[in-house]
Image 1 (cartoon, one colour):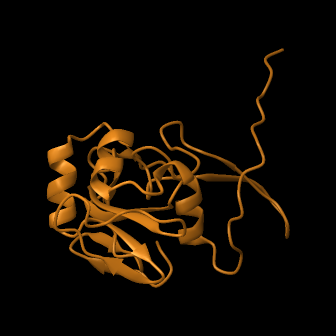
Image 2 (cartoon, one colour):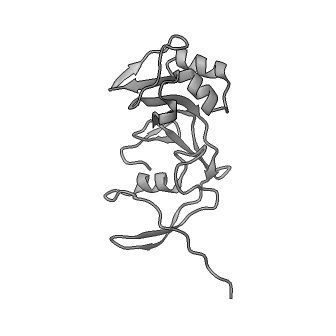
Length: 173
């Protein structure tokens, strides 16, 4: 359970506002759909480019019309010196060095098995775990909440999860 979390309608609501649901019948851990904002500093090759044109050419998994709608709806924007820039049409937001480009999306994470993460070894400095096969280790791709690092951050009270060291495999005789 997340630190500071509260029970809501059969799930656990975390401090980040993401509702996790454990589906005992199917044996799955699901994160209900949530809003997530991708943020990245402006790359040198984007400087001088219009925000929507840059997205349409660099992130081709969506159409240009999607990015136009996202910008009009305030889900695609740039932040310059702490101020959100409004986009009303082509050329309105020309990216500059130091801008932060933001894209808010509605995320639907694939579920993972609700198997617990087993602690193999624990000392003051090291925690070794055996993760369930379906769980990614860190946020990537479609996963942001259903990851080993996120789950450990939910349960660890004093320590902060810093990262991973690698894998060890058992050898067969």
